[in-house]
Image (cartoon, rainbow, N blue to C red; front, side, top):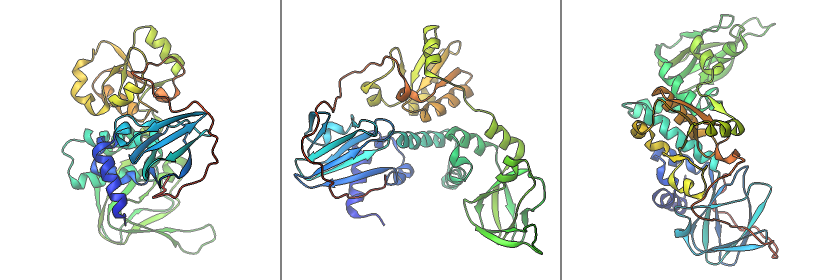
Length: 375
C-alpha cells in the first residue's frame, strides 16, 4: 500500500512537473515502478548515477546543489525543474547532491517515461475505448510475447484479435496438434497439462488466469503444440491467428533509418518532425525540425504535405515509432530515426544552455536515506 507521503509526492508530480502532467491516470499508477525518489535532510550528501542516456532529475521539494566535474549548480526550488528537468550525465558518470534544505528528488529514466507516454497515445488511437476495452488492451500489452515488442505492434495486434467464448472443461489447444493461433485469457481460468516422452498420462504443469497467454511456442518454433490448455471455468480468450502472428512478429510495422542515412535524406529534401513535448524541444533539437508533439499529431496531420517525405524522431525511438505508424496509416511517406535524438551524432540546437557540470567534487560522498527506491 502506498504511503501518504508518496501519494503526496506523486500527486505533486502529476499536477506540476513535465512530462508527468502528460500521463493518464492509468499510466501515473505505473510511475512508482519506473522512477526513484530520494529524501534528503538538510546538509546530507548523496551520490547518484544516471542511466544509459541523460536521465531526468526533478527537485520535488527543497533546495540543493549538484556537483559534477568540478562545477556546482544551485537549484533554488521545485520551480526550476517543473518544466525543464535537470539532465544527469549517462553512466558510469556520477553526480553529487548536497541538500541545502530538507529535500525530495525524483530520478526518472527518460526511456521508460517515453514508453509510458507512447502507450497512452496507443490507447487514444483506439476509438470508443471504454473501461472493459481498456482492461483488455492492458492484457494484450502485458502478455509475454508483446511485452518484448514495440507498442505500435500491440495496437495492431489488438485490432486483429478476435474474442472467443470458452467453456469449463474445453481444451483450447491440445498437445501434438499444429499451432494455428496465439491466445490471451481475458476472463476465466485454465490449467496446463503436458505429457513427457516417457509419461503414461499428462501431468499438470501450470495454472492460468486473466491476462495470461499461451500458444506462442508452436508458432515461433514451427513445431506441434507441446502442451494442452483446458479451461477450469467459463471465460473468454482473445485469439490472434497464425498468419497475423507471423505478420506482426516477422514483418516490421514501421521503417527506421540510421542517423547517418537520415542526415543524407534531410539534405535531399526530407522534412523533419520532432514529436517530443515542447520543453524537450527547447533543451535541444535537430536543426530545421518542426515540433508536433505526439499527443497533438492526429489533430495536426493536415499541416503536413502528403506529397512530401518525412523523418520523425523523439528522445529514444518509442514515441516516433507510434507517430510513424499513425502517419503511415494516413498515407504519409515517413520513416523513424533509429535511437532518436539520443543517438544523433550531429549538430543540435538549444533554446538555452542547461549545464549542470564543470568541476570535480572535493567532499567525501555519503549516501542519504531513500524515501522509495524502485530503480
